[in-house]
Image (cartoon, rainbow over all chains, first blue to last red):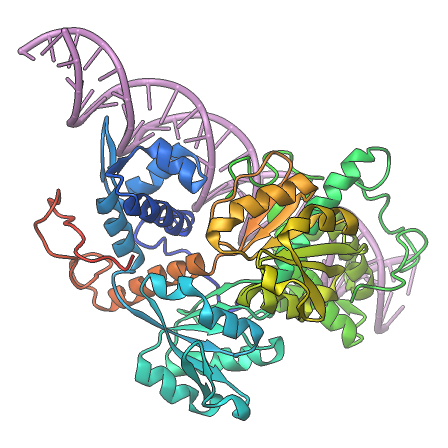
Length: 253
Length: 253
DNA sequence: ATGCCTTTGTGAACGCGTGCACAAAGATTG
DNA sequence: CAATCTTTGTGCACGCGTTCACAAAGGCAT
C-alpha cells in the first residue's frame, strides 16, 4: 500500500489488536440488526454466528474493550452497540470528501451506507471544470483548484480517492497537505504518504485476481494428474528465458 | 464472511501462502508498468519499493513460485510477468457476471480495470423488469429470472454481487446453485455459502469505520490527558448498567 | 582464471492471531 | 440457601506471516 508505512506500524493502538478493530464493524452491524428487532440480549454464540466468526474469537475481541457481558446470560445489545460505536469513534460526525466524480465516485456519493453511521459526504471534488456546480446525489461538485479550502472549511479528515490511477498520488498529496490524515483509495495505485497518515485501499482488480487464483486451483484439482496444480517446471537453468519456462506470447496486459 | 468456511481453510494451496497470493497482483501491476517502459530487469529492492512492500518479503514470496531471479542481477521483468500471470490463472479468460445493476453495479460494469486482465463482463443481471434490455456499458441488462441459464450459457464461475443487502443472500444462493464457485460481495451482509465456494467481500462502510477508529486515536493522542483514547465525553453518565460505561442516548443508527 | 561485488534465496527467531478448553461468575430453580 | 446450569473471560498452545541476516550464486572486471 503506502510506502510511508501503511497502517499503524507497531504501536498496538489502545491495546486493541488491528484484527479486532477490523471485526468491530461486523459485530456492530449484527448488533444493530438485533437492536432493530428489539432483541435485548445475545450470547456470544448467537452473535458470532450472525457475524460469521468463531464465538471464542468474538469473546476475546470484546475482552479487549472491557467486560461488557453477563455470565450465564450474554451481552446487552443496546449497551454493546453503544460501546462499540464509541470505540470506533462513531459517536461523532465525520465529514468525508470524495475526489474524482466518475462512475464510481458518483456511485459512492449515492451510497446510503455512507450517511448511516456518522459519516457525511461533505464535498465532491473533480478536476473537470465542466462538472463544477453539477449536483451529484444532491451535492454540487466543486473544482480541484479549491481542494485546499474545501477540506479546511469542512474540517475533513477522511478523504476518498476515486480518480484514475494517474491522478491518485497527486490528489493524495494535496489532500494530505490540506490536512487529511485518513485516506480510502479506490485507485489501483500504491500511494505514498507521510508518517501518521493512514491509507486503506479497495482494489477490485486485486480481489478478482485472488478469486481467479483459487478458481484455477479448484479446476486444476479435478484434473488431478501431473500438470498444473503443480506448475510444470520452472525456467530452465541456463539460457535466459528459455527453453521450458517459455515466454509469453501475448499477455492479458 | 461466509459461514460455510470462508477461504481455503487449512489446505495451504500449492504451498503458496494466502498472504503471498494476495500480494501477487500487486507485484504484477508494478511489473506491468516496468514492462511498458521496456525495463528489462529489476532488483527485489526496486520492485519492492514500487509495490510498497519489504524486499525480503518480496523475495520470499517469489521463492514460493520458484527461483526466477538471477543473483547479482535481479529478475527478468517479462518472464516474471508471465510466471505470475500464469500462477494467478490470468492466462485464461474469466467470464464474470454482475448481479444488481444500481449505481455501483453500473460503475463496475464501466470500470476499465475489469477487462484488462483476463476478466470479461459476460452478463449484467437485475431484478427490475424495467431494466431488462437496457444497455449498460454496452451490455444489455438481463432479468434475474434467467439467472440460471445466463450463468450456464456463459460458463460463469465468478459472480459479483452489488444488490441491496436484503437480496444478497438469495442472489448468492442462486448463483451457487447455477454453478458459480467464487463470489465478490459488495453488499454489506455476511454471506453463507457451502464448502468449496470462495467469498471475498468489499465493504466500504467497514473500511471507513476502521479509518475512523484510527482517526479518533490520532485526535485523542494530542489531547493526551487522563482518559480514554480520549473521546470528549461519552454519553450521559448514569443510565443503564454503567458503572462507567453509561448508556446510549441517541445512536447514529 | 581469479577475485570482487552485487543480489538472490532461505534458515531461524519472533510476534500476532486463532482456537481450544476450562475455571470463574452469575442466574435460576427447588 | 444450596445445587445446578449456562455463558463469559482467558491461559495456553499452535501455526502463519514477517523480518533479519547471511551464505551461496552469479556477473564482471582485470
